[in-house]
Image (cartoon, rainbow, N blue to C red; front, side, top):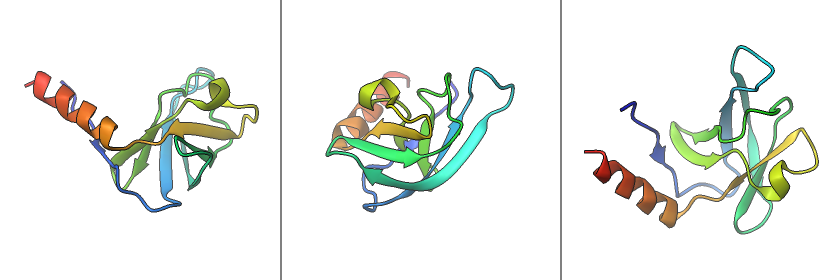
Length: 104
């Protein structure tokens, strides 16, 4: 077991998140920190250049807690400098809790 980030379900309207990604065309991770905005009630977006192929599934972190996961809208969207995540809520938190219990 390697542990994991706690899930952040209560966030400000425009949280600043840090995305850490491992693109397939680099040997080192990329880091991007920026303010996010809501695209819809279920999708959040962030402007981050260079998060290319291989970064899908990267964590969106707010104060050390998981606030999203890179991926989503329109198979990654149409602008390579904009990325998306589903909005995490109570269902994500419950899934996290169930997974934590099953690994004990």
